[in-house]
Amino acid sequence: MLIESRLFFLGVPFFLVVDVVYGFMTNWSEWVGILGILLVGGLAGMIGFYLAFTAKRVGLRPEDRNNGEIHEGAGEQGHFSPWSWWPLVLGLACATAFAGLALGWWIVFISAGIAAIGLVGWVFEYSRGDHAH
Image 1 (cartoon, rainbow, N blue to C red):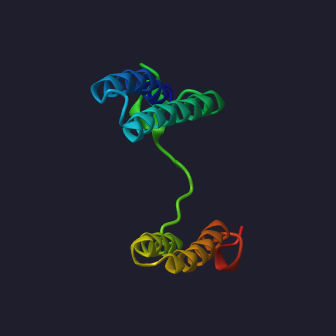
Image 2 (image 1 turned 30 degrees about the vertical axis):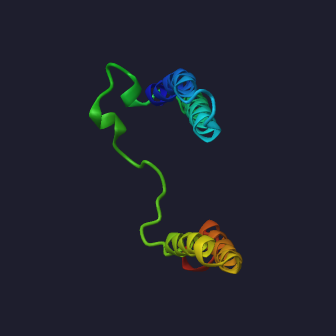
Image 3 (image 1 turned 90 degrees about the horizontal axis):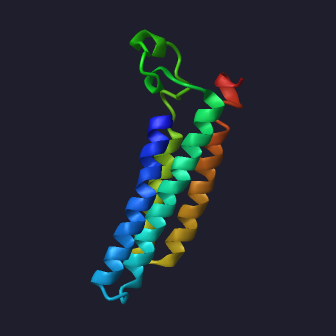
């Protein structure tokens, strides 16, 4: 994860320079773009910090070493749910919320309830039922 964190850390000065250039090109009158580019640089810094922090905790992966072999990355990479329906519920709730922004605010509140149910269902999916740990 060292390579990934360095890539994101390189994005921070890039976006800061782009932000200053954008500010001069718009005569510092277009604040939404200036703030947006600045926030993208901050987001790149946060992701880079997270990846660097995780790299220290996990250690070097075969991809991070010059002498790493392909077979060293074999095996289990994590736990992924192969059949979960809860992301579909969350996606439909988000789509309904965005439609509610255009059609009526009352729809957003209904979709927030659906999203809460979907999020709780997804988080506790493996804590109950046939697949409980």
